[in-house]
Length: 161
Image 1 (cartoon, rainbow, N blue to C red):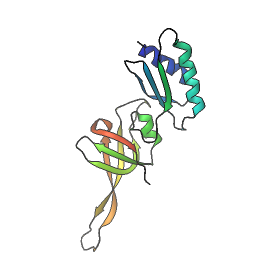
Image 2 (cartoon, helix red, strand yellow):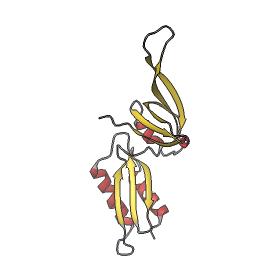
Image 3 (spheres, helix red, strand yellow):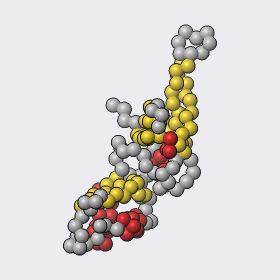
């Protein structure tokens, strides 16, 4: 079985001194390793290949067979760590709360913490139709929704086609 702590330390060493951060590391019972990374400036294929080589230098395939995938958190992926929220400040996001409300708005604020924190407080500006007294038609106003990642099933970049 792959030592997940050694794997985490190896990835941490591989990204040390860069703006990269770990979004997630998983090891299945079949030794399928998935390393998900991100960065405020994006992640290119050469960076993923470099991290792959550093992991392969520590984990000998002759000793233990494994499948390795190193990649960036995709644009359609749910936000898992604070760094992803920071990266998407000012962008449209989709939020599904634990009570089943789906919100679409602009991510305007992210609480303090480390880029790898998984419990994140954030604010989304949501357009709301409001009918002013005496007005014939409703107008759209922005309403701030202060949320916590713990209260959400998912938060992700809102793709609009």
